[in-house]
Amino acid sequence: MMDEAVINQWSNALFQLAKESKKVTQYGQDTNVLIDLFANYQTFLDIVSSGSSLTLALRKKIIIETFKGNVDKYLLNFFLLLVEQRHFRYVRLILKEFRKLCNEYYDIHYGIIYSVIPLSDQQIKKIKSKIEKIVNHKLEVVNKLDPSLIGGIKIKVNNQVFDGSIKGQIEQLKGDLLHHE
Image 1 (cartoon, helix red, strand yellow):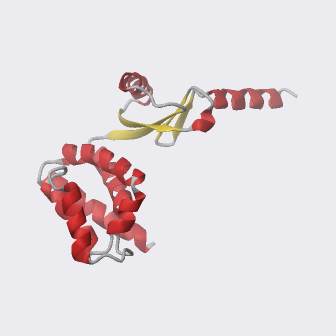
Image 2: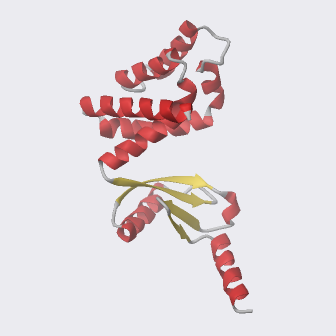
């Protein structure tokens, strides 16, 4: 429960900073990249988090050298504060919660397009446009790979699932057949 309080407190603080500096859009876009970055580099998180054997000064130096010039100075300072307060291990969850706050601020819903292979920007744009019309909301979408789908795509927006995958179609067919016995 403590973790959730820490995540909410820090994500709200970052959101207030973004609003006050009029950078909600910029931070929201940066956040998408950073969330993926931290997901792919768990070792980096382990190194700069408080469980590391490195000194605080060295962990802060790593953050500065990694992010200076690549993120806004306030975001860099935010990361340094997380390291100082021994909460950097939560950075990905904090950024995800922050992204939710940004999307609520702009009344944008978040969606995930699952596919077997990466989709092109053009394909994502087309799918996003069709789903926006169905849910009647602006969407922010990401493409995640799910090899269990066999083929096709599955889209999740809030609690709605649009399943156009072969696996989903097989499950639907199986359900239909079982109901007709």
